[in-house]
Length: 71
Image (cartoon, rainbow, N blue to C red; front, side, top):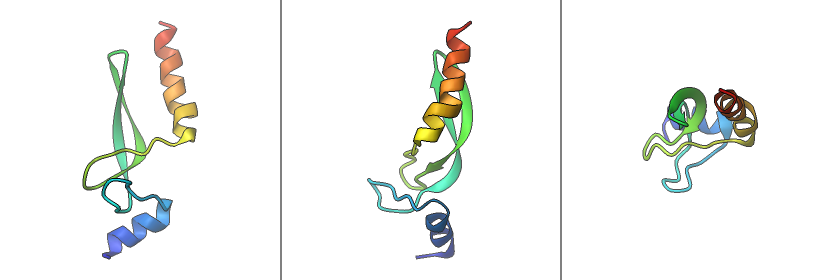
C-alpha cells in the first residue's frame, strides 16, 4: 500500500465497498432541483463513488434543500 492510501485510510477509515480501497477527501458535486453545489466528501479514487455521511445529509444537504424549496 502506498503512502497516500495509508494516509487516506487513517483520515477517515472508510473503504469503497466496490473497489476495496480507502476513500480520499474530495469535492463532491451534487444536484438538486436543477441547482448544483459542491461539498467536501470522501470519494473512491477508482470508481468515483461518494460516501454521504449522516452529518452531511442532515447538515449541508438539508440546508440547500430547504433553501431551494422555500423559493
